[in-house]
Image 1 (spheres, rainbow, N blue to C red):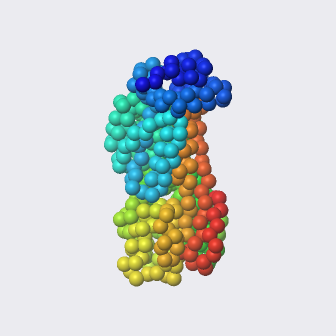
Image 2: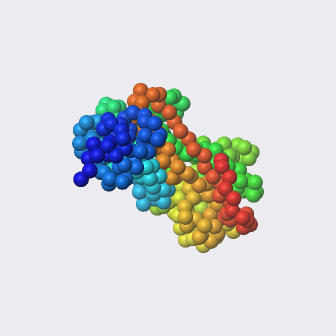
Image 3: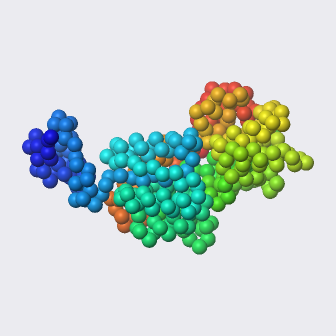
Length: 350
């Protein structure tokens, strides 16, 4: 079995240089790095991960804690995290926190005890225990998809205590509302997500801003919580339909809730968009297969996952750097559930 010394001799460099290339511990000239990688490939050298971790105190592994991994949106995020981690020579350990604050803290602790170099977490609505654990143990961490405000007032716009990566939420939601208003709708309902999540509050704010931009009044009765699930959205949509003056258009705040809203409409024999126009946050592969085809905001799931890895690696390289929040734009995918005629599909960043 070839050794690191064999690789060094083949590449014409020192063993230390081979170590720096394989472990990323020091910058190496591009041609030297390539010579080492070529020698590794030619000789079939496999680094001893256990020995390397003992020397560097790094395992070159990342922990990912994301709920509802079966959700197409989080599946895309997972693909982005995994491909980027592998590209940088990191393995991935995955856990599902089930959006439960106590379980969330437990699974992150288990990942930490397995000596991952850092964690990427989509936090629950109440991540106090999670934040306390990460802070107490100085675990390098990136919050993904959902923001966490660590000040006394959750609404403060203070600098975050942790690195965070998410998509824009408020402006794209406002765009869905103004689009429906431009089609003549005056009573537009919102099926919002689980209370406490930053994505929920931001999409509610976007909904309100959209109404204001369209010159429409805000009626609290038209905002219901589907708790980010299909069953919850089905119940919430039913409550909207039972109003004396129900909405003529709906915005659903994630893909699971879109399914629930469609169930509620179907059970009452209501058609989309004939009886109810519909726009949804979160695009997914089968949105184009519905009849009518679903008008949606598409989040850049894979890019979010890849960016979270990049931000975590930056944190590992410079532990004292200021925390930052990275937001990525979404894309408006114009189809026919909003009531517009079919047209060539074009994406627009929002």
